[in-house]
Structures are given as C-alpha cells and as structure tokens.
Amino acid sequence: MSLFQQPSSDERKPLAARMRPSSLNEFIGQEHLAAEGSPTRTAIERGSLGSVILWGPPGSGKTTLARIIAHMSDAHLEERSAVTCGIAEIKAIGQAAKHRTTKTLLFLDEIHHFSRTQQDALLGLVEDGTVQLIGATTENPTFSLGTPLLSRCRVLALKPLSENQIRQIIERAQHELDITLNDQAIALLCRWANGDARAALNALELSAQFAFPNKSIGEQAVAQAMQRPVTKYDAAGDQHYDVISAFIKSVRGSDVDASLHYLARMLKAGEDIRFIARRLIILASEDIGNAEPMGLILAVSALNAIERIGMPEARIILGHVTAFLATAPKSNAAYLGIQKALDDLDEHPAPPIPDHLRDANTKRFEHDPDETPYKYPHDFGGWVPQKYLSEPNALSLPYYQPTDNGRELKIKRFLQQLDEQK
Ligand code: ADP
Image (cartoon, rainbow, N blue to C red; front, side, top):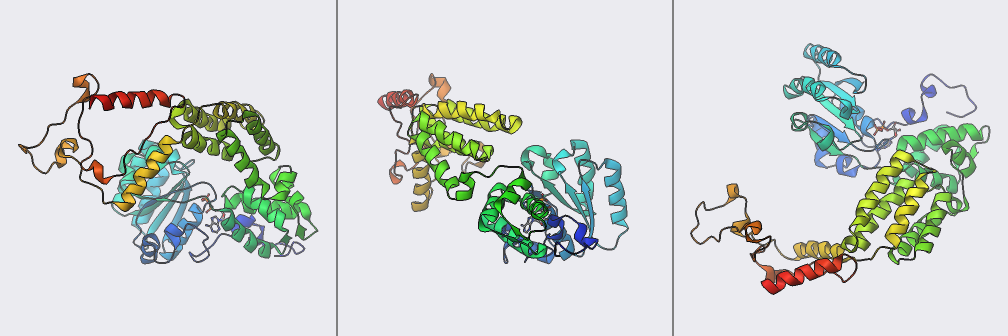
C-alpha cells in the first residue's frame, strides 16, 4: 500500500502482522528447523510433528511458525496466551476438540507463565492426542516447565535473527510500504533490532510515519522511531565493530583507561548495554579465567544487574566491572585447555572409560576379579593417585597448563604437589 492511499481494513493491521510469512518458503532463517529436507521441516510437511515447545527470543518467528504448522496440517487453530488462559478454558478447548473431525492445534504463547497445576490440565489432552500443543516461550523450558509436560513435547529452539536476516525482512517491507530507506537507515534498523523482526518492522512503520509525506527514509527518522540518538559512531556503521574490538583488546591488555574510554564511546553511541555485558562475560572466561575467578562472577552479575537497572545507571555497573576486569591478572590457560581437548576428539576416537570410573549400573562385568576398585579420594585425605584416563598417551596432554598469574599460581603449585606424590 502507498502511504498516500486510504488503508483497507487489512492494511490497518500493524506492518509486522501484515508481513507475517504464510509459508515456510517465506520464513527467513531458522534453517535448522525450516530448511528443506531438515527433519523438523519434513515432520511439519508430513503432519507428524507432534506437540512441541518453541523456545526463542521475541520476534524470532515462534507465532509465525505455529501458524504455518497449523495451516500446513489443515488443523483448527486455537491461539491463547498463558498469561490470561485458565484451566476452565483449557478444558473447554479439549471438549470442543473431541467433537471436531479435524485436528485441533493449541498455540499457547508465553507457556512459562503456566503453573504446574495448569500444566497438568494440559497433560491428558496432549497425551491422548486430543490437541497438538505448540507452546511458545522466551525462557529456557528446562527450568520453566515441569518434567511431565516436557517429556511429552519436543523442544525446538529458535535463534535471534541475524542482521542480514532482519535486512531481508526490512527490504521486503519497504516494498510493501512503497518507501525507500537509505543504507545507513537500514543498517541502524538491523543493528538496533537485536534479532527481533517485530521490533524492526514496528520501527520501520513508525519511521515511515515520521518521514511522511517523504517516501525516502533516513537514519534520523529511524532514530526518532527507536527513540535513540544517532551518533557519529552509528552513522559510520563499521565503527560499531571497531570500538567493541578496541574495548575488548584494551581490557585484555590491562589498559584500564583505554578500556573506560571505549566503554564511554559505546555508551554515548547508545550501544546495547546487554551486548557489552555479554562480551565482558566471554572475556572474563577467555582472557582472565582462573587467574581471577571472581571476573566471571562479576561479569555475569553485571548482565543481571543492568537488565534490571537499565541506563543511565547501568553505566556505573559496566564501569565498575570493566575496571575490575581490566586490572585483573590474565590467563587463557583454561580456554586453551578446552580447545585442545576438543581438537583431540576430532583427531582420535574417544578412548574407553576405565571400568572403576563407570556408573555402577552400566558396568559390563558385575564382578570382574581384575577390576581395580574405585578409590574415594576423601578416604585418603582428599586425594589419592588413581587412573582417570585409559589411554593418556593417545592424547595431547597436558590440556591445562596453569600460568603463574594471579590465583592460577596457587592452582599450578597444587598440581605440582600432586605430581610429586604420584
Ligand atoms: P514471536 O512469536 O517469536 O515473538 P512472531 O512470529 O510473532 O514472533 O514475529 C513477529 C513478526 O516478525 C511477524 O509477524 C513477521 O512479520 C516477522 N517475523 C518474525 N520471524 C520471522 C521470520 N523468521 N521470517 C520472516 N518474518 C519474520
């Protein structure tokens, strides 16, 4: 529709709803689920998917996928939100489903809001196939849902859409609105949307309204729609990656002033504070590790804290953690260790697990007279020499080579002491 015409009733729907793909071929990304020939897509096409929980961030396509599944299987679709749906309603849906000749698909959004009792009300309907349940949640279902329901549903994880995938969605929508965005405006939308297609489309629609009657949209209209200031950093585009790279390298290099400088530049540019905190969490493990184990704890707490606090106060928390991490002793020994162990598995077949370490229930021979019994280290004062790998010579050991830095020196000395007692 052009911005200059009177909208029809369908066109009065938000852009995000109008742009909702109605088939898997229009569905962007999530290839692990939707790519042709993938097991999930094949199951959807054959109508044999069964009940599932779609777990993914907002605007990643959970509702869209549920509607496509319903459409492809010619099912009667009931859509509810677990925030407002009660047990009586679930029972009524079950009753109606029993009298229907077609399959009933129940899409239950925000299923993590359901209490255990409400989940129990669903169990019977799911188990006897009265309804095919598609639950959607932004929270890890392992923690937010009970085992009985989880054991009856497959969990399908959706990923946040990449900037490129958001770009494809935006490009289609420009066409729908009969407008054009300049390159910077598209780049801003894609980056600020943070993997959420709904956020990108809503912002695009608002930008078009702000720019009206102009049909060419620039970054100022996008910034106005997203209520964020455009800075030089945004307009340059690539600087986003350069500044975060310089920030991480300065923290790794223990230059605390440079670290705070780049942090300030990111904050002024309106960088996503969760993105900064997530990068610090990775750095705390990759570059500090056991030289200062508090690093990871503080970085995780920072993410938790800034999500509750938001800006402008989040700057204090990020500054605190940045200063701590920049001035902490550094080690990448644990990071290198896990890399080496993983590489080894690519090159050698995994050796058998020594019998004395195996789970009592899975041991091949109940009473093998040659078997060395497992020694419980605490019975020997906390440590006892014992074999934990059957073929150590087949592996490129040692994996973990602690440095002399910070707390890791203690670990190094401890390992040396054990070596002397072997
Ligand atoms: P969720 O249920 O995960 O919060 P939706 O499926 O409701 O997200 O998506 C919101 C809007 O974003 C949809 O109406 C559609 O326009 C767009 N969208 C989301 N995911 C995709 C996708 N994978 N491909 C194309 N458009 C998408």
